[in-house]
Image (cartoon, rainbow, N blue to C red; front, side):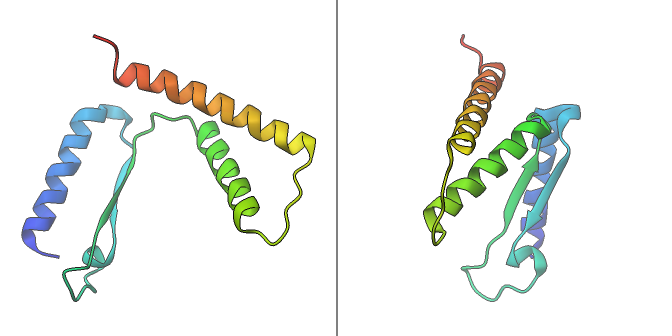
Length: 110
């Protein structure tokens, strides 16, 4: 990784600290450029930001819903009973309410 890339990541991290203040839990950079095993212009790096703005409960809901969707879309054969379908709908509804509330906090109407 080049010095200007390291400097850019430091600047990004500082800006995120300013935006999220005490709520910022982690900034994780990863990818072939970070590891140092890149050998072309196609090499990349990605940044994952853990802001602490979303409760763990909703992160778990998202993981469960994503897993269920993946099972249905790509599994050999998946049966969804009424109880599981209702549970997915309830989790999705709660997640969307939380996301809407968070969006209103972060981007209030002016």
